[in-house]
Image 1 (cartoon, rainbow, N blue to C red):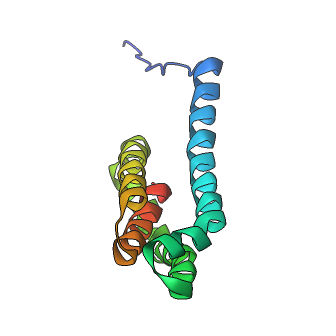
Image 2 (cartoon, rainbow, N blue to C red):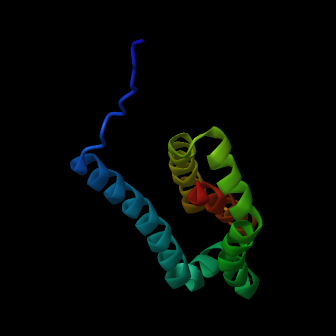
Length: 122
């Protein structure tokens, strides 16, 4: 009778630190984006002729999407893999940020802000 054992490759300490740094960087991007948007909101509203309603929707749209899609994002991560969803989320966040930065009107800006949050959840 031959006993076989499966061995798992131990994760190196450097790899774990690199993963932690990457996740912290992604989280920092999310916080920086929110901070910059809140600080620049009056200027953005003036440039796009959006008024006070746009200023309120810039933050609200982001939080609304997070509240609605937080559980969905976790479930998708369980189903399709956290790494895959993280990479998709980072790409989506980058594209949505570019759309928000280049948006010519208030409606597209709010839609881009809504699209940023599900990407950030991944």
